[in-house]
Length: 277
Image 1 (cartoon, rainbow, N blue to C red):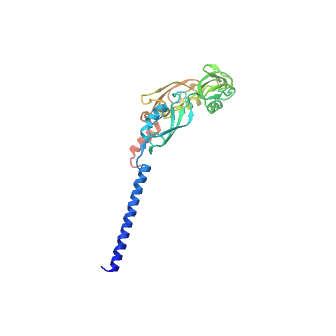
Image 2: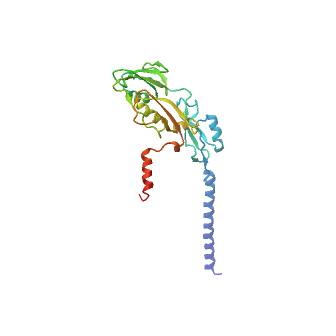
Image 3: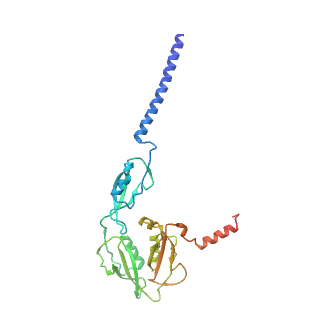
């Protein structure tokens, strides 16, 4: 073998060895990085809402997730100290050891100051009540010169003075004026609306809620917030109602139970008769 051939083969061998070494280093680094970052190993975040902190710790233990309480709210109908909200949301894909941020339902209710609603219109009183974190309760109408003028503000059947500290989410009942020449209202259409939106619409029409009935699909507080009205009584229509009368609501999480508006049904019939359009 010539000296030139010897050196050429030597160089070729070194280059080949270098290439192999580079590939080995890249592969090794990738394997090591995957182990460090646990590449492609994702864990599904469980639903922690309505759990106690102890229950939540047990639920996230397999994925070594860490829980951190960052905020609290007060929801009267929810168990004290239970988890109200989480981030990341249930069903999210995360790496092992991920931190889960929690908002819990406060053990002690927040206190707010009762505003002075006397002399306000119903619309003004509603805005003030909601801005304070309170809820509108029953509307009682008595004869007066001005319809929907607030005459009294009550809590648990007793008049409550402005400035009184009261638990947030408390129901505030209103005694309102009713002029006999301006005492008629109509039932709004609330089918398809969520609970809170439906209640607000009914109060906006100077009516009360006589009963709220959830079907078998509503199993917990979270379901109740997402439930929609599939039936109301009296139904929406042109029949006049006296202000202060009551409406019953029937709610479900099964959207298929919500009736289709007549206009949509008519549109569907026209589409069937004219398939080319």
